[in-house]
Image (cartoon, rainbow, N blue to C red; front, side, top):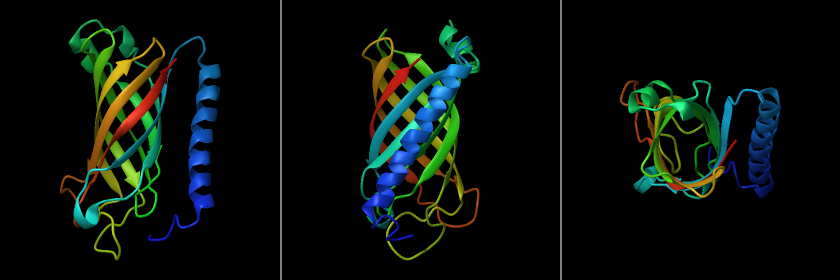
Length: 195
């Protein structure tokens, strides 16, 4: 796994592919569901590892996430309705150097603090290409290819469409499979556009 991003062109092409795929998905989904707003938000971000020691990943991790709202969570009036009507998200992040690439998805709940300030919680899973156990080199030993993933964000609505967020996420197997469980933890910033 070490040396997989030694060539800058390969890393740049992965970022370009990730961005282009999500933008094409957004435009095709947006066209297909113009009458019904299932596609809710497109979000781009960047984060860094929070881990210490040998399990720390170096570099900045670009990410992109698409949110869907098939249950119309934006129309929820009570907190009980909000819990029962989460948004669904799909995303990916690219790990440079000794970092881990991930494809993730799950459910997301948003609670307003004020009309502009909000908190978001997400629960789901991720599939990664990191080391599973005791391999050579730096980076976390993750034990399983499929991990649980939790995320939290504090966001601010700049306009009705644009928002900025401080984000954090953690992925691990919660000791449900054999092998090490270093986990993946990141924090960063993101910008989102709501349709």
